[in-house]
Image 1 (cartoon, one colour):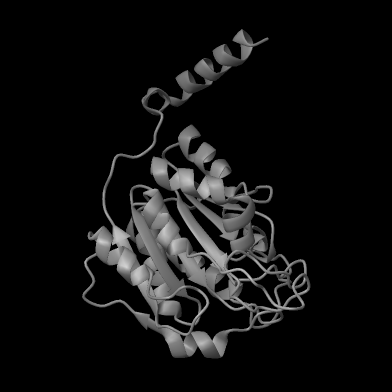
Image 2: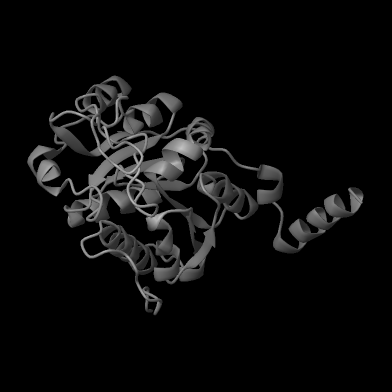
Length: 280
């Protein structure tokens, strides 16, 4: 099967989105080969921003959501058909500004979807405004004198909100990126993957990331306190070491809609029709 579509790719040369695209392609192909999944069982939801074109470039079922609404759309798809594997891609502005409330509640409810946040720490599509994770002092189109506020830590937020799988990866470490994404997609419950990537045009942090990142070793992924300690090592603004890998992974009851999930396909349609006709 060809996993890449023939759509013209308009990402800038050097964009971190290419790494995410090819890592997800490899994850989907691997699950078909190793886990007996069918290509039509994958659904990719994307939002608004540079990342969103991934829905045009990967040859799987996809849905364009509006800005900040990737997670509720993904949750609705999963609740409607629990047999599907649903991955929601969002940018840092998409997920952490307009969509922040949805992120918190998807984690709290442990919705069985995978959230992949392409965090380049800038609004690239609108040519360089700051986002909730832009570092203090960042100079962009909307902040020529530099950002005065502090960025927030999305990994810490996901942990505090109750996500049962929390990880951070870096696009320049493709093998590690691929490995963690596969693990996230296979996780039963809400998976949150923060992807550090550069914006080659408006916020190229390659040199800084290459010097600061390290992969977690010997870390107990069932220990929430230890996960929070590792997540707080870097505040998204200083030059501290940046931990990569899985911070936290546990099993917990998942959000579901059992009455529909137990029904055969033909009966689901009958129930939906009854509900709709009853509202007329």
